[in-house]
Image (cartoon, rainbow, N blue to C red):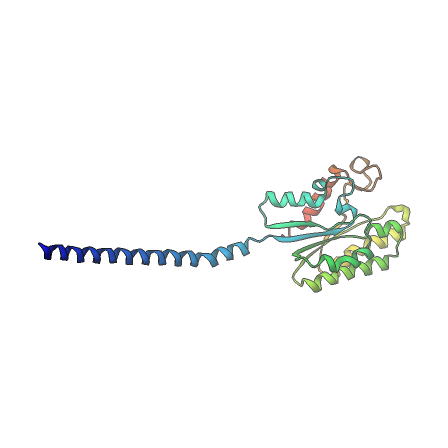
Length: 231
């Protein structure tokens, strides 16, 4: 009987040993599987990281006189979100900005990653009668800096016009800046940012220059018509 008890004790110890061994193997297998999934999760996160669309302009981009959520860059973000596209809009508009001012601050703006660059500047130059050659030179400088910093960036240029009271010769020369720059730099061109809004009293604020929220809806449609093709 004593011998039987010894045998049973040994068998119990052996059984316990196998239970512990199997448990250890199972834990290692689970840990290895968890570790193997970590790089996959990291890769998925990298793949879904949103790209940046930078709107660089003056008060039109900044949304002067309307809520930030009513300005056309924010409306573009809403459109993007509704289509589940992985892009984040950054509004870098500054009221009163000229092409010269934009050229001065572009280096600082480019410290953040940019995948799509939408340039909307020049209108304040035109209203001030700044020589067309100077405006064109400044805009080209901005474009060149963006391309140098981010060679694979997609570029969009928003065309602008000036009122006829600036003189027909000046108005024509000013308007030609945009298609010429777009062609020279392989940029997508929005022919006229304020198409359907400029000169329409009900779609502009009391100053007759800055769009109302309804006006921004139309501007956003003008922009989206071109931008959607490159996203």
